[in-house]
Image 1 (cartoon, rainbow, N blue to C red):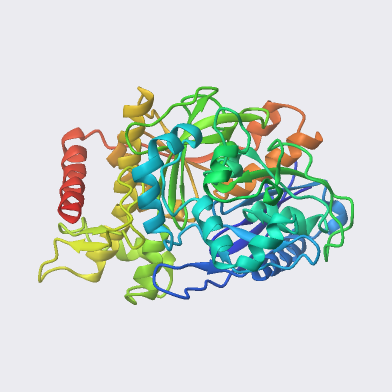
Image 2: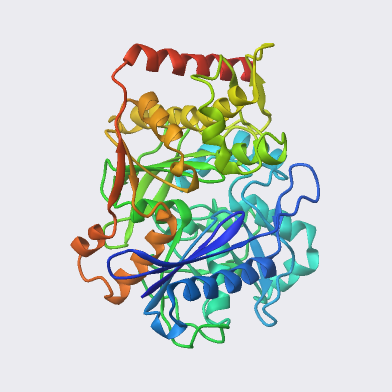
Length: 490
């Protein structure tokens, strides 16, 4: 079987997959969040590794197998989160700075003004605290002793995939793949290499950096991992959204998927063509049919499922996030209420890190059900923003949308998304496409699956949501969202 490890923002999921792509066992472990200051979000790298060590045996136990049944391992991860560790001791030198962290906002504003166009041409990214480069720069500036050790080659930098590969191989391999490297703001889209001018701009020594290897390729073998025998190949690595794209079978130009997790991420595969966005999207590296490098347009929404968590934890409207559908179904619409969940700023296509969330259209008749429905609608509205931007950039409209992530279990949300877009929304049998993609990459690289036909058999659609044909309603609803966003942005 294949073991897929999906290390996410709020926890780690491990799946055991059989040759038909079915999930034979699942394990999950939560990951503590650390908020030392407003706008700062951190993870403890040792707690990340501990969550992996907790999730994997739970998945094996659920599958009723031991580690000896594992043919290969795939790894996928929260992407831009940045950490440093000591190559000799293997110890982290500081907490990891999470992709949601906004501490480098001022630095990014300065960079965008002076160098934004050049950085975007080279990397496909906008200058935003979301990405790794300014996080890494901040760590090196705030820890002079670490900077000195880094200059001597003692310190390693990585996104979470690199940290996990290091730990899984007992420190033998310091590597990443092109999909993760392309999220650092240090990696060239065209060259598919670390860019020396960017390294110099951010004060990053080349010795810090991981080797970039093919997504479906050789990342070493397990060594000294509790619960797993030595010698299992780690053979698939991809950032979470590109892994989900591969898991959904979106491996050729024109295919698209949307992941509804903590954030919301919509990717449109562009094949071998680099499409530079004019509509506020990102250009990123993706995987082709064989796991090699290809390209995609990406729209990133910072707060999606986290808005439902806010209803539960912040407002106390829900006991469990899964109750949101039943509560929202108590009303036929949101009663004119619009939630703009800009709790960490607005991502694509707006890129406004300075704005904060708003709840608009409240009346004396507004109920908790209206607010819950508005929260669900905010996920669909933000996704429509991304679809519109992609149509502008790529010159083609999305004809169907593959979906995955925890929130796609919500039938109300999926139907409303189809209605709002006017295209079919397809939910797969395995909604954890992020982990599935990493597993498929590992299996492809090691011959576990020998053909693309075998991979496609593992990517079955469970349900297709057909849109209502009322275009006037669709456009009126979207106009309501656009007016609310315009009010917030001033």
